[in-house]
Amino acid sequence: MKSVLFKKRSDVKRGRKALSLTQKNEDQECITHVRKSFIYHVVFSEQISPNANQPQVYIKKAFDTQKRVEKFTFQVRGSFFMTHNRVLLEVRFQHTLNIRIVWKSKIFSPKKSAVLT
Image (cartoon, rainbow, N blue to C red; front, top):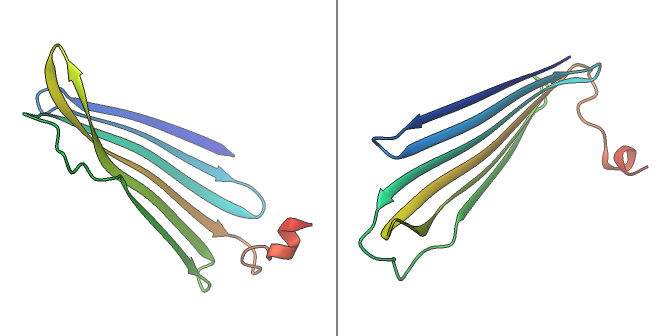
């Protein structure tokens, strides 16, 4: 069984927009929850920052063998500059991917050799 939920939120006065997609998939082996979110915040800028940083990437993976749960989080944060009607804008963004797998059987996750064969 698969269910999908899409949310779109925006606040024009504060210059924010958020999109999120939540998905739940259940099969014989496991229950999988996937959440993807995209958040944007637009602010006025006087000048382009000369030391604009590269986007920051965060990755976190966790296993709970007693509860038979795997968690994976991938997050990217950063900003970029653009012009709109001759006005310089800075767009700050945050993209997130969360995956949570709950295994039903006592065998936790397949071994590498089982996946590769």
